[in-house]
Length: 85
Image (cartoon, rainbow, N blue to C red; front, side, top):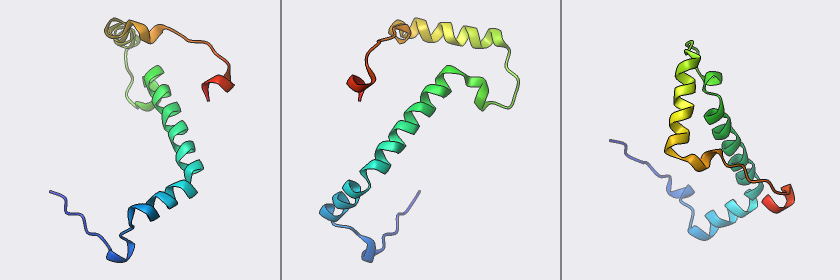
């Protein structure tokens, strides 16, 4: 069980918390982009994050299983970068 201890001097009211978020929005956006890139990289190549050797046949089976579970994951949608942002 985790008990959160709050400092009453740092207990922000919602308006102040929103102001802080707006002031640092670029940081939040950068963090979201980096997390999405990391998640994509992790899904595409599992061997980058594992120290133990993995049989490539097992990785192929895993990839085929992912495609069977979600066939649309193999569909690539092309578009201009400006349209995506």
